[in-house]
Length: 617
Image (cartoon, rainbow, N blue to C red; front, top):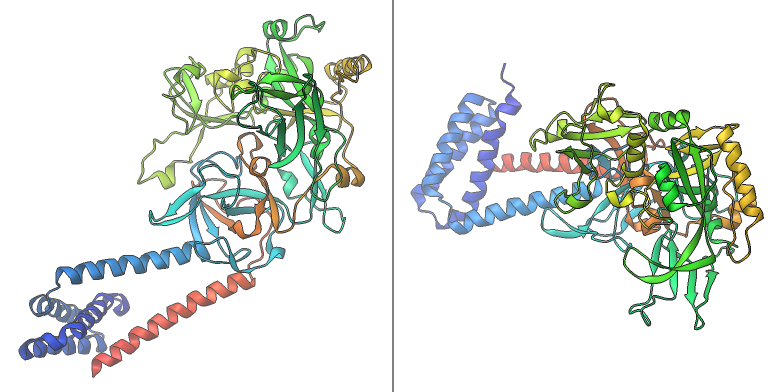
């Protein structure tokens, strides 16, 4: 059975288009041409009113032929109609994308495992307010709708983000959008311990961060964060040096006229100044880590008296201004650098197996035995790529000890359905090898996949994005307790840390790496990071691969554009609403935008009905 509504849609469109063209050109037409066009218009209009699809289709074709004969479009008409249609479509698309909803593709692994590369999302632009199109502003914004733990979308306008410029539809200038998890709201004070975040709100009340703490969090990317130096250098030395964490100036090192390095903590905005650099936001509870072989230990830490291990866990911790020395950094700047404390733990078979069972890497490709971080250009990095000679060509990822491959090639047309599909590898795959060499390679290189991150020197600049911390008196790596409470290796480590502290001096202090427990409210108030008014703290779920507020700082309120509502590709277990705080739906922004859409639809329908009535005359 033919449904009249759909069958009459094209004849109605033909009637409107030809009538519009006729209205523009009628005064210049010959009387016979006018009569012919009018006759065909009336005939088609009658067929439509009778709801006769077959007759309407025939009359529409006759009207089109008459239009081609008597109302030919000039080149100007064609250009005008084409441009008008394009501009109208662009206007509607911009309004929908900026004020209602948008389809979004994840470009990187910064939100793993919640969101992965090439995931396709539906982003709601009405979760928190009503956006002004193509501007960093809101017609309406309700801060109470912004939930801690929700996945937010914001742009990089007026933020310290390189290469943030983009265009919409290759026409309108704009800023790139970013997807992160909302951690802190204006007035919150936050403190990191044990991979978790503790905090109080502006009134001093303890925050419920249970949704936030389902994901592991680290308070820094690198100990020195972003380093600001004078330009040009004075006599070849870049001094003074200002260190930024969360894109805020936090400390300063200065080389004086007699060659001594003086350090000072910088006052925080409306906050007490921490006593030590490592007090910042709980940084002292965390360490940078890497795995060393016995040969590496003998080269980098000669003379140490340690029990035998299959590998050795090196922990670099407690960055401090005390004992600072001159260094040459990755930009070849000769400048004062932070001092750190370093510890080693010999690892046995049980530790290596635990590391292997919780191993996580970025998504990477292998070809001809060479591996690289997916998204990077292997040709530019050919001499730095690590070797994986036993691994077949393909694209892989390892998550929580399980290795996967992406079985489908990138096909642009089908990519929306296939790019993110993964297949678990069989147990005999080379990536499941649990020998010390493979474990060390995956641990030290599994995020960056560059040989510069292999251990070659003490306190080298290229340090893997692998972090360690204590929680419940166990030492955590890869988000799991690798050395558990009471482990003999851990007890021996505690003893060595106490001995090092006993012989340290004020000029070269040693700060032991130990579990001092969760922070008190007073410690949160004194050493936590405070989120300024009309600002938000946003972090990636995958701290090891995320440029987030730890780098670019707080997100201005005007930059918040919406939230992630739905993951619709690839199909699988993650399909649906991502893990995040519940978002209310019956809100003013949602209701207002839906009301506008429904009203516009009704108004459009009434307009065309009126046009049909006019044609009866």
